Length: 334
Ligand code: TYM
Image (cartoon, rainbow, N blue to C red; front, side, top):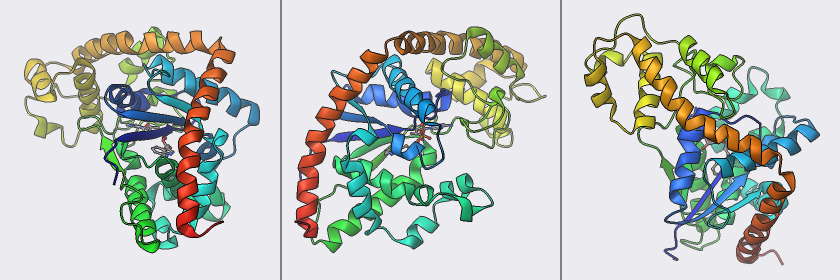
């Protein structure tokens, strides 16, 4: 088996990426490009599992590309492209639909969450979405996949599918079993309104999240309104166990300042959360508003963004075609 490390990850172009995407995924993408071969994909085929307005989807693909670049991805180092432009993703997804098991898909909690109470009305695409995700990763024989904790179950499924393919077609180690790279400290950034839910694009209230395009003023207002706790900051982390909103604010602050949560607590114990909020607002504004400004700037250069995707597509296609040739051969497709 080749020992080459290949990183793959994807982000859905559903507009307005937020602090959860940034801390849980994008920052990791950027640091990995220093040490490994990285492939980062704007997963437009995943987005259409829920209806998207066509012109809006086009804009969102470019905005997600701009967000990749504004967060620090370098197209000279990493391959950056959109999923639908490399047809191998759809082809391998079909093959993997035939390897994956219905029982495995039935266990996927994200489908249950996204389909809501009326599962009969969800698209078939939404149901088999995790197989497409496995195809994204295995098409490049990726070994490492940086994601937030919400994607862990999908990655476990990708490993099961890889393993079953290798066994069914008697080709041990043909597909590497992709390893999730999940941030230890901040694998799940929570909603600012309800600390038991993850920060998400789909939550109704914009006050639940910090968007990467938010202005300094918006960040200030959102952190001011964020739920915390009526009691002062405790001196030990155990006391935060049932206070998810307070813990979330401390976790975000810890991540952005690169100080351990224990250190922060020991320095701020006994103080009101308004103290933490003032400091958090300042570090958030410093970190996020330059990214937002860069996104806005890049969005004015649409042909530049399209060109990045085009070049990325060419590079991704070469790897995908080579791997697909071997995959077809293993299965007996001539
Ligand atoms: P998506 O588009 O929902 O999210 C993109 C990335 O952001 C992470 N993330 C978070 N991390 C921490 N806290 C949060 N609140 C938070 N919200 C989102 C996600 O974990 C993800 O890493 N199915 C994937 C996209 C995908 C993919 C792939 C990922 C398609 N194919 C292959 C890896 C490999 C998704 O919907 O991510």
